[in-house]
Image (cartoon, rainbow, N blue to C red):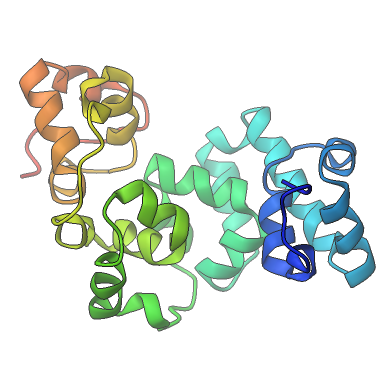
Length: 216
């Protein structure tokens, strides 16, 4: 990454922060991404990067697989964006396991650009695949996923062939939702694949996938 990065790339705080999220050890970050590490130190971003790397280390040891730990971490922040940026490991775990609602109920709702459905739908039209949208406009994609707008935003997109033909992908996807209705609404292709392939019972039984058969 460092060798290919254009001039000034590591003078952008967001780029440095995103790079730090790839590591769970500061020594590894310093060795493998020296330019980003040096920029963080020179620009006064090191403390924030250290917190992010510490959070990623907890991911590695399974700390964020415990709901109580994630909820307690969320209480330290006032908004979702602040929590996501400063403790990405905990936030990602909450999103994956379907814990965002209990974690964020105390937080202030910030009405930003991607909180408006029209803006998100318009942004999605720029891309042909979900992965392309997520990679290039992650904030808009994340808002669509959290608010249940993915299907309407992505209806023009090309499906990633075979994604939902893999059983583990479907089971992992089911973990992100608390009810079957929510799963159907936000990730209908995955649900249909589970139904067609006879995987629904395993999706319901998976720890963390709190999907009731009767919540339609």
